[in-house]
Length: 501
Image 1 (tube, rainbow, N blue to C red):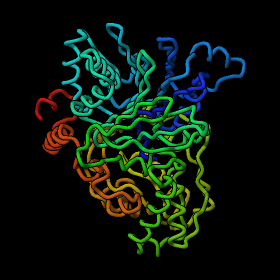
Image 2 (image 1 turned 90 degrees about the vertical axis):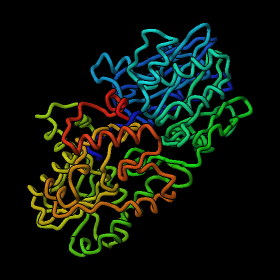
Image 3 (image 1 turned 45 degrees about the horizontal axis):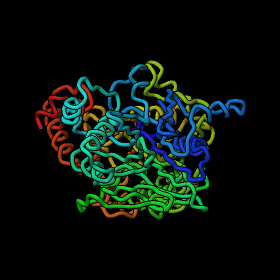
Image 4 (image 1 turned 180 degrees about the vertical axis):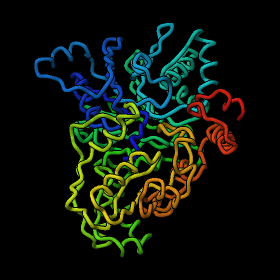
């Protein structure tokens, strides 16, 4: 469950060269990615030189049959971009959330840009100062605005799309996967030089529709074929002839977010040639091989639904222990723990998962979990198992112990909120009242994913950040944290941290 973590957002964008409305593809693409962003959603289409936008809070809505023509009238055009979002930067009051909803636009002197963005910008103060020179009074509620205005400023200098994307790649520290459209209907996408956040491309069998998506499930739901995952530092422009690919920046190292495999991505999504669920099953097998003594002392396996399900199957296959399907998620209890008052948080977490007490009473239980971040959710689950009579509770955690914040689009941006930054594994077990906490090793994680270690971003478990400013900020704030200084917010939003680095 990842302690109810938030990721920045999900991107889906498409163009339809049959001159049919693109909105249905954007809509279904975002519905398939709603797990990546529950706070807000937005659609933007392009027609006759104009952008047509709809933005709103909450999940992507169901559309009644009677309202379909109204939506088509509101969002005409054959090309568009969409976004589902969680906030990992900016304020979280309702007004700020509405202002920060993507896609975002920027315009000046007849030039216009619209983008959908997934990631997080680290050098926000530097970019804001630069943008304010051209756009006095500029303010923002979402990092996508920084990227969009940075691109527009470079366009105002007369540079083409590839050149402005290259400048962005070189001058923005952070993670960014971007899809966009210009005032002339040019359709494009690009990734940061480390390729930290996902973005793939696909097309229809008749070569009339081309799309970009954070996950392959959005291609699947639209009947599109996956073509490729954008490479780090790659820029892609779309024409009727298909994808025109350019590798603009090659820094020699890919750093794809390892947490996508453990928690964020849907299990039926595919990165490169592997489905996520297959990798999670291997996580489970690895945990068995790494913890044989615990396995010998256990009676059964229980998963924390739903991201613990695939690893539970792997534990079952490797160990021979029965996977008891006695834990189920209440499908329509959708409240997120981070949106609740403290007094309501535990009761809601408790109610979201139904555990069948007679199945675990008196049993020694291995519980498969994707990650432990703050520890509060996991503690509630362990306490519930104890109340129901579990004799032993062993946690098999697929993601290694998280010891440092993420500055690239996951909302765990301070040391203080991470139980693993303050406590060793044995101490964590004592705090959450488990008999043992068994984290998958970093080596086991890397081998199961199938990438090499230097192809993954493992900053949150190693303290080694792929971009220079992020490393400096994290080092400064870790020193201050260890010295007892209070953390007052997300690291990259604290100007003192920027200046100190």
